Amino acid sequence: MNTKFEKLSLFFDTVKTIGFWKRIFGWRYVRNLSYDAYKEFNELIDLLVHTNKEFDDVKSSIAVLNNDNEHLKSEKNRFDKSLEIMQTRFDAVNKENAQLKNENIVFKQKESDRQTKYESDVSTLNSIRNLIESDRKKETDEKQQNEIKRLQSLKDTWAKHQESVKQAIKSICEKHTIQYVDKVPFRGTPDSTIKLCDEFVIFDAKSPASDDLENFPAYLKIQTESVKKYVKEEGVRKDVFLVIPSNTVDVVESFAYNMADYNVYVVTLDVLEPLILTLKRIEDYEFVNQLSPEERENICRIIGKFAHMTKRRIQIDQFFAWEFLEILTKSKSDLPKEILDKVIEFEKSEKLNPPQEKRDKQILNKDLESDNKKIRKEAEAKGIIFPATIEKKLNALPLYNNEKSNKNEDEL
Image (cartoon, rainbow, N blue to C red; front, side, top):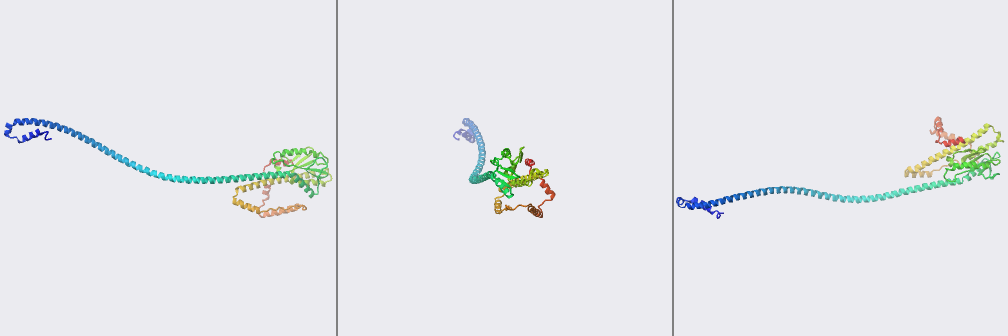
């Protein structure tokens, strides 16, 4: 810089050292030097302006740089904060990921345990289901076998019904000294025939052909017409008795048929003895036409009472039989197994011995009445017997509503 502006420096040095004589004799030199110095001064001013301008530019650039620097610092701080937040999030994600991994491991273990338990439960359930199905099948098979046995028993009973009726009538005849006719002196072969008052009394045993009782009433109706061949014969009583099994009474629609020329009565095996004994009483009269209307009425009343009592007893026995069967069925299904096993154990140890009937010993009414009085006294002592008014009302109640049965009783 000193080399470039040496004229200006020289001018200032000359001005500072100029003397009087030099001002007089050397002014021209000074003046020329001032021109050169002024020129350099202008150049210095231009340089200064330029320098100031450059300084301002630099200052402006510095300001811009400072501004950019501040912006960069702000961005850096924001970036640092974002990075910190991201780092925090990243740490949280890593932590959550680790937790999820642990949970996934636990879940997989639980799922494996659950699957194992599920398979075990399914296996147990299948075993229980198979056991239940087996028990049900066994129970169904038992019920089916019991039903088959029951039906077979019915068929066997019905198949043997004719022989049972024949043997029962023979036994009654032998017991009460009544003539049993093995071979009738007329056309046809009735199942059983007895002779009372010089008349042949026909008993025909009738039983269902199968376990379906729906057609049994119609079958009996046809049989009431088929016995006409007997009553046409001489000496045959105009009252014919069709003997049916006791367990078919419920389906019978009528127990008495008035066939104009003869009558047909439907009876059971249980009623044979009182019926035959009632018929036998007619032998006490030499001629039937000698009976008074009152005596005939009494005979008919006794027969009617026997028939009613027999059917009513059968009806009651059947009612209680069904009730007992229902109780036994419910006991088997409703009682706990331990109690049921104990019940069966006690049942096996029990034994019921009803009075034994002896052929040569007659059952006397006085003995029955005496036993009945003893039972009533024992019941009264235990507080079982109802007062007379209540007992009368209970006896008046029907066992169950059976219009068909009442109708049949009225017909008989």
